[in-house]
Image (cartoon, rainbow, N blue to C red; front, side, top):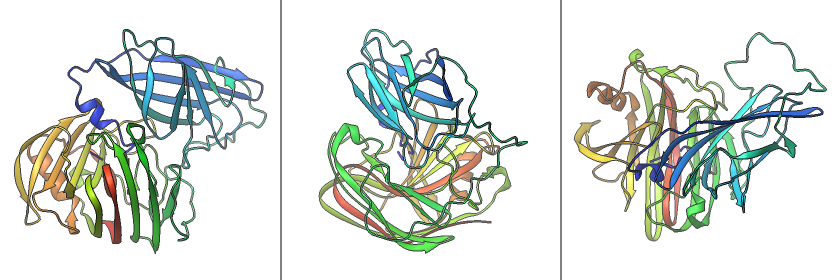
Length: 391
């Protein structure tokens, strides 16, 4: 599985029963600061749950944020995406990551996490943003500018100049039309580290790499550093060519050459990870409806769901896996023999899903990502050249 966020996929895929719980909502104020928080349990099973949190800034623009809340029934937050989440006793603290700290007046930011519970799972209380209790709107000291509508593309962000390895979980590389976060979404299930770097590139074609050393539970994902084109719980780079509706039958051609170095036993896959939505321009709080993974290389790892058979695409035989991870479908095409050199058209795989009746051609491909998904082990994946072009 790839996320994104990456995603709480394994935790959800083992659930026997999924139920939807009621959302807890809290709203807030103080002087020139104010906030509203929507906390919703999106899926729940025996002993575990997924929650989505949306923060609305009702005060002056924020350059960074820290959301705190209190659990009353012993719940524990474990794995998070699009935020760094820690817990001390009953208090949980979520802080922004590198790419979502700025929140304009009346703007929103979203993140999610997986948690555990026993006995009861009520909504938390005592929400506060940057120390300000969320209990009502306020008038900002600097009124927001009046605009007819937000821009459909984000403002330009400069390319990251190659300058060595970046090893903090909040590090992000912006290069060409892609961005590469040092995504360590499942680090809480083990211990270790991960670094990312780039050797340069611009526009369509880039080169980059990641090294990792993770221990802990072999069946849970620790990290997924990936070159992201398009949506990933929000939009960051311009001129991506996405989204595209499947019914338009557009070519999504990609070329990827990489090397894999493994020290001892490694549990991982190197894969494309693609997100699909029912709408053309999803926001940061719009969950995908479908996930498509294309595994080029795997070591001691298996996808979510169950194997459905095999298919030949692009002259290669692939295993097909199908599953559901609480809020979206996940489809994995797993190459029956490993490769480190691929030239594929993502359209061939989405067309296969449509032909099987598993996905509607009205869906929109909103993101194409590529990188190694690490469960445990010590190694490195170096991409000598990577590109995605849409026409």
